[in-house]
Length: 343
Ligand code: F6P
Image 1 (cartoon, rainbow, N blue to C red):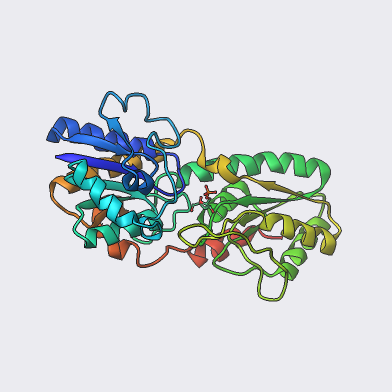
Image 2 (cartoon, protein in one colour):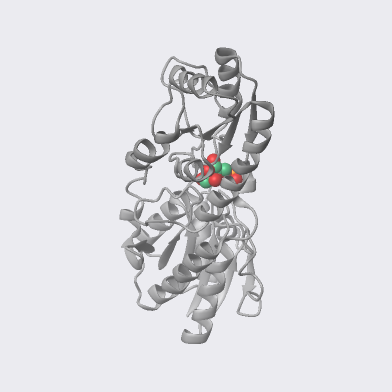
């Protein structure tokens, strides 16, 4: 078969491991030929491709990012986008497409599948918020990076008796904040799922600092919001999928904490550091398993499906189901575990 591969949406460590696994298993076991589409759906719309074979994939397993490039282009929001995409797939003689992406990229895959395109999806989100899979590759790497940052913030915050607000990724779900907060010993973890109460946060911080000169690290997911009417927030620009460009809630939060408690409060926004660099062993293994399962699914003609991890087994789920709901943080993890260490 002639198989197209693309990576869409925000990059994350492990994408190259998926590509390598798809290509290796496809070439060796099925004698497939591959076409790499550059920059996600944009490359399909504009017919920009790159050769993709086992030789091209040598050495990419430990590399972060994606050798195919990525974008947040949505063919359904570009004039003639879908027509051009379908034309490209015909002119490139693509028998099947492996789309590696999050809810947006796979949302497009699902619509194109309904138009008759033979597509298999591979879930990708650093935020770990796709409901159909227990975990996504890249997430463990991001948590590891955030935890190491929090460890470092502790020693400097202790020396100055400061509060440090550490902002991590997490648009709709606070998985990175919760895991990194638990692993790093955060004094507070704030997630998008539960609007935060600034009064309560300051009460906890005061109680903690009253006991001695302990530094406090407040971990906040970038998508966290204050409870209505408690703090003003700045609105930001929106991309083609309608997502606001996040980042910066920690600055407003730090100002409020300092004003209300009198403790010197600093901010560290980890930003794209969390998405860069080499994937952890766990993420490399998961990405490799997903890649192999995806090309197997192509040859089983399991189109319109996405590979996923459930009970440590790789399964297939319809793309539509995979996109139906978000996987939000288990309140038990937040309140039963992280919260035990607040104050
Ligand atoms: O959706 C994944 C994500 O990492 C979010 O956590 C974050 O808001 C966004 O991508 C950042 O996107 P960009 O790389 O376009 O700034």
